[in-house]
Amino acid sequence: MAIGLGTGSTVAHVIQRLGELVHGGLNIVAVPTSYQTEMLAIRAGIPLTSLWAHPSLDIAIDGADQVDPKLNLVKGRGAAHTREKIVAYSATRFVIAVDEGKIVDILNCPVPLEVMPYARKLVEFQVAKLDGTPRLRLAQKKDGPIITDNGNFIIDADFGEILDPQKLGEELSSIPGILEHGIFTNVDEVHVGGRGGLRVLKR
Image (cartoon, rainbow, N blue to C red; front, side, top):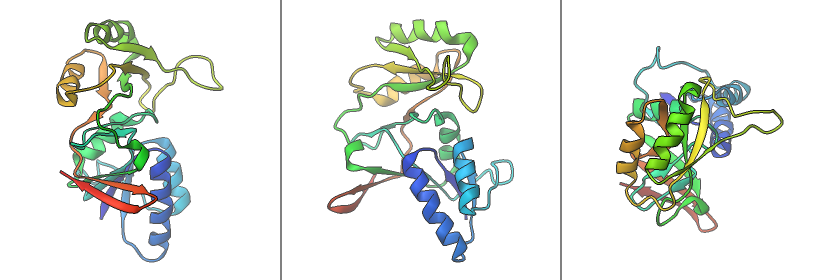
């Protein structure tokens, strides 16, 4: 199988387990969505490939910041949501793994936007017109903003409760300078882990 691997703390556990399965004979190749995921996969012994070589993936596995009852979600805390969305839409099956704390009635966390530096002020102005509050994400242990693997800025846009994720996503996609936003509406399954065990939510 050709699989897509997202980015973040949850996916790090997935990568570790997949590495164990590969050592046991599992035959897979993986497309990473960030340098972090690439390094973890190499360390785990997972053979890597690219979307050039495998433009159609069997499955993509990722985490999320929040998930609503209709399986809409917000991603991008790891600043890799652009590549994560490309990989997700390249996969026949898109699966999210989260803990119970990520399940909410209404999405309400800030939406990460990957933004061309040249367009920062335009994007902030347009987000404000949509009644959002934009905030440039700053780096830790480094002066200045976070720089994505694609060389762009991240703006976290707070819209409060997101009652219509599909509509907001379309509005954000229409703003010049936003490479991609962190609203995902194409999830097939969400695997939720908790004290009571695992439950699987499907569309």
